[in-house]
Image 1: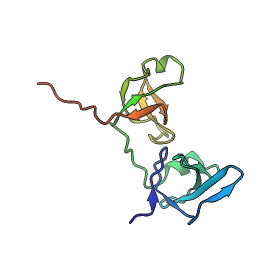
Image 2: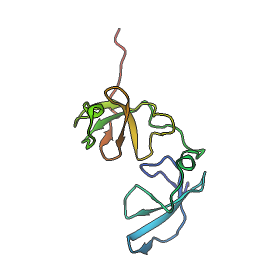
Image 3: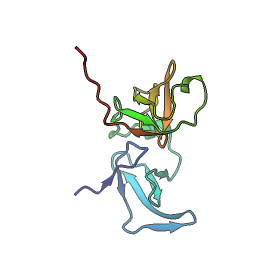
Image 4: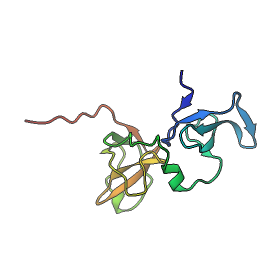
Length: 141
């Protein structure tokens, strides 16, 4: 049985490092450490978004050998979008979009995913969409 946890919003493979949940001023938390690159963080309550223990450089966060773009090519359905600007004009509630390759030095899964906006890739944050697995593209003859 594997002791690792897939936390939403990260592509790291975290392992719980404490046997019993801990408590501090912020509340009850569990400590986690990536088994591949060693970054550490805490998860408070039942939230699936870990809070890192310290500030890591973006190169450190993206150099984990476990990182693969597992999101690329998936479809999402937007529940709401709080972003503004002409690039986000097509991001309306209920619209369906394909996840695309992110710009250089960015990754899908780092607090959100990239879709194509009006003229360039834009980032949607976790919580602004749901997976749209039932969408099937078929070839028409």
